[in-house]
Length: 348
Image 1 (cartoon, rainbow, N blue to C red):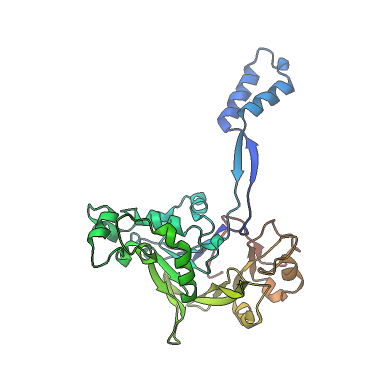
Image 2 (cartoon, rainbow, N blue to C red):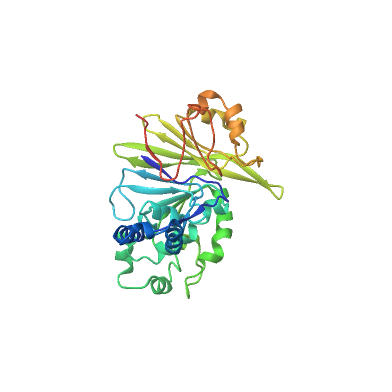
């Protein structure tokens, strides 16, 4: 399995602007200087003026926290490896995917940990672009034939807006996150004209994971070559909003050899006492890390991670979800993630 950090920054992080000129403009300007009859007549001020005229504003964004997991197994899209799973979708995952030269048409499934916008903001993009892409999966093209998706759904009275599961992305989600997600996405996704009862299931094949009403716990098994990874939601308290709790269901990934990855997503404070054993058992931990000057209390702050986290757990942690890049003592943590960083597991 390969895990890529698509975005590593906090919810409201913004990038930086800088003035640049293109390679072609720089080359042309250099030629002009070199070919001048007397290059000494070109003053520094004149060159500065010309550089200012050629300058363009470039934005270096900081994508919000989300990850891409790739398993060596047949994809849902075309049956070819890898199967690609997004762990949350940031504020707008299309740009983060573009940085990896990917788009929604390259993604097979999504896991949503909790319904904050910096984790679900890309869901409209994922749902709408895959729905209106007739080639999203091989099965979808067979099902559609030559029909346009809205016409197909309108005439399929038995489904009324629910395409077959093989034609849309998988959505893995805990039941306590599902209903808030429906409310958050409902107006934006209700946009297929003429088709009644458009819902989340119009766009995604929903797979409930975690504790169910009957007491059973549903996990999901991903193949990875000759081995497997078992994905299980892990509860953690994130915030109390309007006197109501909002948990974040991170994931535990257990390899068939026993190797264990913990991705708690957004957690409160440092390590909830009830989850301490998960952290001790894990071989690798993706730890959210707040670096704001004033701790918010809804994420582990870098000062707490440095001063109070068990050194044995520190060594397992890859830090992310920060505003400014964390300043940490050398060798204290396994690493600090930057956008585009990737790791393969089990760790050899």
